Image (cartoon, rainbow, N blue to C red):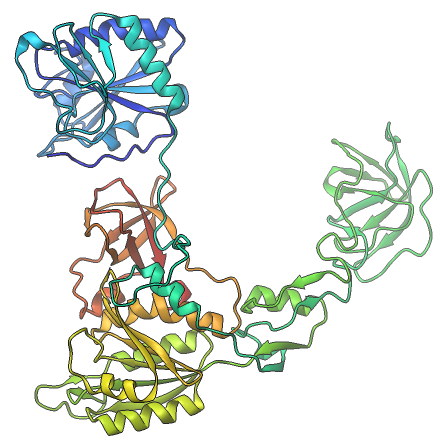
Length: 601
């Protein structure tokens, strides 16, 4: 059985595999000096199948390790070695071992053993041993070094097991041709196929998103809103700066402004003090300087500022120390934002930094898109309103409240229609009424393929609706369509599936509806700290907890049980771990992508 392998390094890794007795070590002992002679810097990792020691009994390092030191590092001016006691049930993880290599000092890593891993390898084979080939069940074999008596298929590259120079040629050429594998980012845009999508079949997450977005048009109504009330609103018109920022050329330091010369003068005559909010009306002559505060306008004739910590102020004269370059510590007028330039383009969702910048330009009112109006309801006779007695065989309605909260985070105006019970007439009335006052309607429950729920019957009477199976977990069933000009989203009934489906499908649609032009989900690479499983062809959204590790990288682990009804997993987590369609299993140390909750939850 093959075991997945992902090279964590930016240099190639090439394995040598063979049955015991074929001569792997003998070959490497000849190959290594030949590669060194040709200027190739090597690292070698060997898999040992038994307990071993590399230090000598009786030596201090040996005795300290045996006494219980988990790691023992011995160093001299010739070499250093790190020994780690790490008892594990199975073979050590090659990606972990590779990370111990100083890759900036190495051109290629040669690996002896680890033949079950899916890493590129050279197979060694001798016909006289009567052993089967490895290449017949390992597609990672790049070439076979064998004897003259070995019969090989013509498509496999043959190397002479006794010709070390030929094998060295192959290794060098392999290293030259090798390129790091690019990690496929999940949820990327689907390739253009020039054909209609068959919604009767299962869709990828990306296909579902793209299809939905093709029907979404931003709201056209524009409102003029006070800057104070613009938080989380979407800018409808470009904000053109009416002023230069900064408005004047000014000092970036508390210090002294003067005209630069080369060489510098030994001292300068101080002619004025310039405070922030004030200016020096005259023009500085050669040999003159002004004391100047941070933000104060640089006088005409001056072009350079030296900080006060590197100045010797004698009252009416000043001299400078340290390196001085022309224009240092001077902020030019308009260098941040020039007058007449676009300070912020339409389509931005306004947050604190945007509002602060626009305030600095003098904007008091801004043109923003009207808030999208979204109607929400839950379906099912088994659903009860929180705060009321729980009926037998029923559950409290959690979905409507998570949906409303996420809608408010997106700056939507929420119309709560409550719980609509299982009646076709009630649902038809609710859908028609909602479509007349809302830009979008969201329901939860009653969209599973094959269900006989009344909502399907009602939707068939009032709108254009597609029921899709999305290749994802959780949240496979999804309904989307239109009721007149109103968008409709039918989300699954399981609470976690509702939240995941909202994040992936409803969120991008509502952001576009609100006028947000260039939004994309935040996906960050992280190191998996646990094993993660999925299924080829399906996107898995596992709830996870990410943190910044001691190595300065993001690490993530699962919250545990991943049932689609377990809301506690969303509370414990701070992200979704997005396992793409191409992955079936990820092991600790692999790179995964996470979607932080911060944007929405």
